[in-house]
Length: 79
Image (cartoon, rainbow, N blue to C red; front, side, top):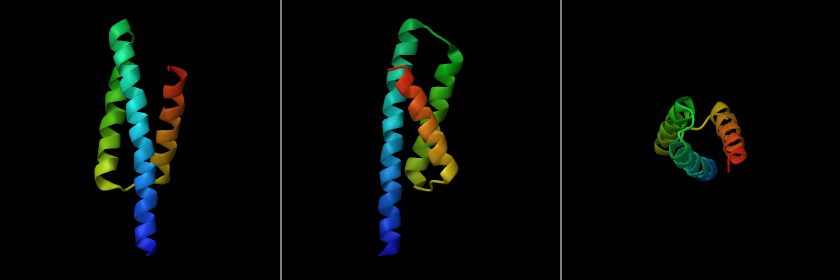
């Protein structure tokens, strides 16, 4: 029973990372259209790949959550 609730909680966190991916895809498309900095596009791709790894493993640490929230907040600045 407890293992099941942990899995559900991790899935919820995982879904919130999917929202981060969606926000960063919007940023990525804006950046390509306006030809802004290459480093931001690289950063976006890195975070996207990292999030996919998290989605597959469902192994999420406190650090991953903080990183995800940080990028989520920074993504919101550009939308």
